[in-house]
Length: 217
Image (cartoon, rainbow, N blue to C red; front, side):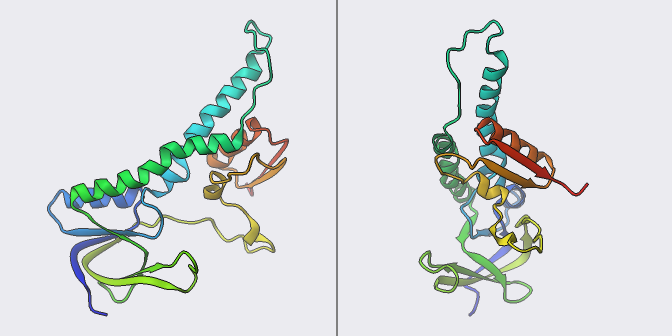
């Protein structure tokens, strides 16, 4: 398939890095396109940093309630987080951002593509959008575009733990999408970084009874 459009630059990935590159280069007059298969906005804005702040603030309220109870402030009843309601509230901020981010690209003159990107050559990118009915195989639409320069800014993903049952593990992205009425009574976090500790404290304030953090170091 011959390239349908030609660009000075193609950016693969619409997170903070990809957006910064695209907007900076576009301001220099380059003709460019940006591609991603996920909703536009990136991990930080939609699945981790920003939505996590809302959950952290809710956890702080519960924590302050517990610490100041019977210490000069009259608090008549136990305070708790309604998890599903809190997640719905968080989406009031993240869902509109998807449309806002794409509108910003269009306003800046950046061409947008939704789909999986793969190299057909050193400068040709094939974009595939799969049907939601069968995302593994059914191709709904595809196109090929050409870029003089190509930037890959797709971020990273959790390491495969190479152990039995690892396919059942929930990632940090999925934790913020957990929309059930409440969290489970027990949660194990694998990895002892700051995100793990933040999520553990949020889970504790949301009523999880037993939380374990496993770290190799």
